[in-house]
Length: 242
Image 1 (cartoon, one colour):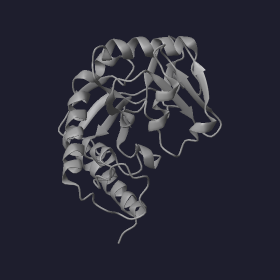
Image 2 (cartoon, one colour; image 1 turned 90 degrees about the vertical axis):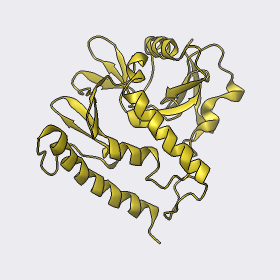
Image 3 (cartoon, one colour; image 1 turned 90 degrees about the horizontal axis):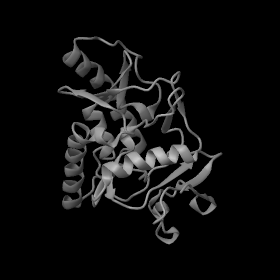
Image 4 (cartoon, helix red, strand yellow; image 1 turned 30 degrees about the horizontal axis):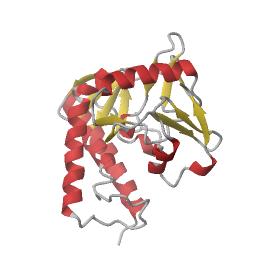
């Protein structure tokens, strides 16, 4: 039986090769080897001429936990397909929903990467260069207000929202160095959830803070309960930004 980590690595290598082939099919450009990929967690996209090209097949692989459809299991050691057909069906349906969101509604949120166009194999977004955008390790009141205003305007009266805020957000939130505009870097963090009070976790080993962004936030029902065991939430510093 293959180890899950080996299974993931082999498929990432396969998908990086598939990215190059599909990029040439869609755009007529041969990227060559060694271009566009630096870290394993970024295998699902490449950057070319200041645009971010998200490979659909690779993103689906990521959203479905490597096509294993393992639901609610942390880091299984060995590869195993979920035998629950209804859970598999739900996960596949969520991929379709996410793809529809990316090609339509995402730009209404304001703080998510700006969607530009779609081809057979790619979603194309703006790419935020480090020279112009700073990755944040903490939030100011001004940052929080901007996030809150954009996010709540897009999710008003919705029971289900598309949110990255069930993941830790340290270095995933960017601030424009000139204008102060806020953008969230990674669409891979987006998930479907109920419209809960807005809070943001920053954790990277040095920083461990949870920002509460609205008054109706109740600590006892905090979405911290939904975070991975990878984050030591008992030691988290709670910060009110309202």
